[in-house]
Amino acid sequence: MNSRYLFKAKKKNWQELLEDEQWVTGTIMYIENKCMMLIEDEKNLLTFHYLDDEMWSANIYAIEVDESTICECTGLTDRDDTLIWENDIVEILSKDGRFVIEWSDTEAEWQMHNFEEEYTVNFDNYWSHEVEVISNKFNNQESLESEETI
Image (cartoon, rainbow, N blue to C red; front, side, top):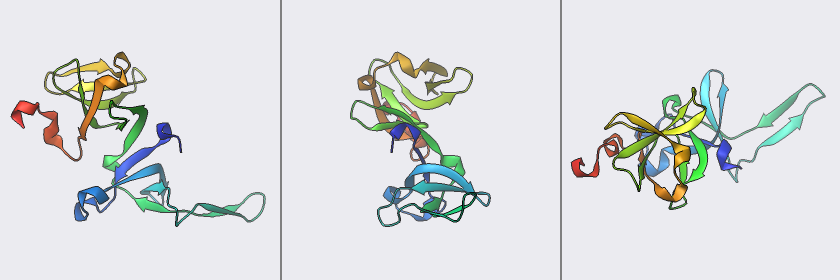
């Protein structure tokens, strides 16, 4: 699956899970007003059954997710070859402070927002080897603070 079209989100019951079990990666869809993540799973492969020209049924593997934690993949990686996601907290080697990855609808681009000094920089102005993912705002809100205050 092309990473550019991936999403990740925390499972609906993430508060009850260990930290390394909270996130799922896949494609977002809504079923009966529930936000679901269609995921790749070797044991539960996606299969389609065509009933006739107009109808089909599918067996899918999906997990309900917390809609407020949905993050879109930028399709880019940092200097450690880690995928960079919307809402990730990153450091830029040539700048002080930490930034959150955000999508700008008005500029139609990924941007990095510095909450300490309240300014935004264009993500396209930096090479991926200049950026390092530290955490994300859902797992570690305090990572938005500078290292000296943590």
